[in-house]
Image (cartoon, rainbow, N blue to C red):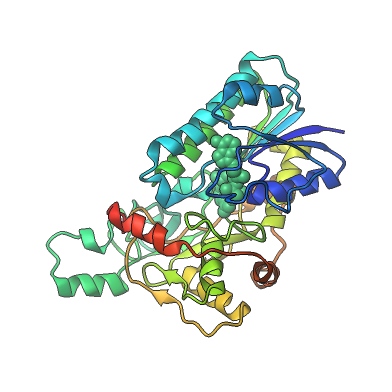
Length: 382
Ligand SMILES: NC(=O)c1ccc[n+]([C@@H]2O[C@H](COP(=O)([O-])OP(=O)(O)OC[C@H]3O[C@@H](n4cnc5c(N)ncnc54)[C@H](O)[C@@H]3O)[C@@H](O)[C@H]2O)c1
């Protein structure tokens, strides 16, 4: 039996992983500060009481040390999670995600412990734009888009035209049309938010320390994870949960740009399988893996699917506005994790969303989207 510490184990992905680890006969300790934005009512009902819960903050080295020193393996999921919010709560995101990880690594290097493996939760957001192909120039990685409102010298009429049709990034070499292709792990990283920078730093610090001291570390770049237990009242993270919360409250989901931007949505159960394989298999050690499906889904389509599944008579509200830093397309190249560990996401989107809708009908969802959107606007981010 292994003693596994899951930081952030009361959260969305963590709680599913904890269930699976217990199911496999592990002894699990959860270290989580029950961040009020994620857990407004404290420890969630779904929390697995067969695990040991310690309320603690990864920013507190002493408290973290006590749990790390009891563990055989650590899965580090605790983090402040929210791309837009990280652009104005900068110190909070840096302290939670970078300093929190620094504390963990500092303990692993300087204290007596028996940890034999560390998994860290990285994110697709560290890529910025995904990879594209240009007919003339081959594989290219565009810079972040400026957004229509920033195009200098454009008249109002031009702005409208741009905002409705010209969302796609252009080839950084020849300026021509480009098409999104799967993004592999060796794509250059252009982190486009403080959250993304914090995840990139976390990943690099963990791998560096792992390699330096011979401690097996695995960094998992999760794409857009969806499933039950993602907070439906937290408007800062998880587009699926935000749309669900809107639709459940009979409000149209609000879609930025023209709705044709795409993401890679992966079912939480598949993410848990990827984590288990990485914990169990030595071939994962010191590797970075994309954890996605490899299939792009348009955000506007996701909004429509959620409306359909909740059987509501609503139409997505397409805003044709740009959120600074948003990427147009990014979906996973999943070759590396498939070759190394035989992992492939199994759950089709419709099947996952059906299960998610069934769960969403039964739980409370406070629609706080307007408040989050107002904050972005006030900070000049939309
Ligand atoms: N959900 C996704 O789509 C997604 C995508 C990419 C990466 N990730 C990463 O996966 C991990 C888990 O994400 P999630 O979706 O389950 O988020 P979540 O917000 O549901 O879970 C995070 C948990 O961490 C806890 N936490 C936050 N700050 C903490 C601190 N300072 N000390 C201790 N605990 C703290 C929270 O209370 C929460 O229970 C995060 O590291 C996130 O960056 C998630």
